[in-house]
Image (cartoon, rainbow, N blue to C red; front, side, top):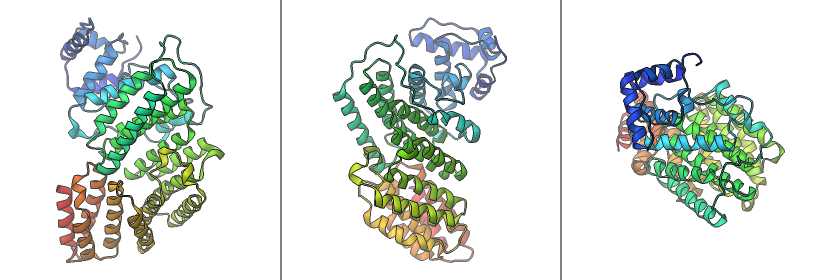
Length: 456
């Protein structure tokens, strides 16, 4: 027995159980799952003191704490499995699959969605670097454990899974992550069970690539509805699946989404570190379209830091790379990034920079005009983001009456979008309008309009 299990103690306190209550809960869940387990309170005390319970108890505890505290937890989170090391990709084939299975199962069991991950902190700094350091290591193509039985999935079945994933992505772009997130996590759970077998190398790579795509979608939807720590875990798992698939470009795209998440939650320096990590991992193989996409992420991070010159440079790089890209050669996972996407991100960057440099919002206007003109109808949430940026530009220019007219006419579809991110941006504009009410009589009606949009 080692020292006290501080992780388990922490979650034990968060759960509010007594030792006897937890022992009984483990026994009930174990019996429901067909296991013969019957711990008592003294056994729970020994777990808290550092004793490592045997299978299936770690999984049972993870499921119980997941339901109790309202966030997905794995045995590793409870100090009951080996933590990943800092120096390499933390999971081999079997451990990666197990982690995916545990995390998706735990996520699906959560019943209290109202917490929205509020008690879960994002990993940053050295902790996050440690989780992602293996991205820079040579690819590990070691064969999966021989104990795995042969898989029965072929190219046709994987193609069907990939088609379903494309449909989920389309739904997300139209309606946000709120409506479909659990369906995606359920599909991902089924995918992880398929991975728990031995396949020819080409099939294995494609399965891991498909799993990476689903995991990044689960992460993006989780981010969209405010489950930030959950999103980060899915992104991390997606990165490792992309690594195992040998798809560097897809890994770069995952890191770009992690970077955008960091800017959204107010950590732009972390975002810049993630962009740099993506570039280092891709090396000279980074295609022009992916380079353009990364540069737009970088521009938003610099804007949040108030570095207008760096925004200019990053937007210039994005435009230059985009002009050299061949749209026909763009992989499917980057198909969302087109001229409208570039213009929308450039507009967002300049509007954000204007918070630090009054007048910079004027640079956002031509980009917004292009984004709104070119945006595909299927990207309803992105169109709303463009409109929010436009309203924000008018607010920064002191044109509150025009901002109110735009908001009343163009933000009504927000009520049909299941996206916390969308309402976070609208709420920020509402707060700015409220602050402006003291010196502008037109700001108060705008604040009321935006309040009604958020309430809807």
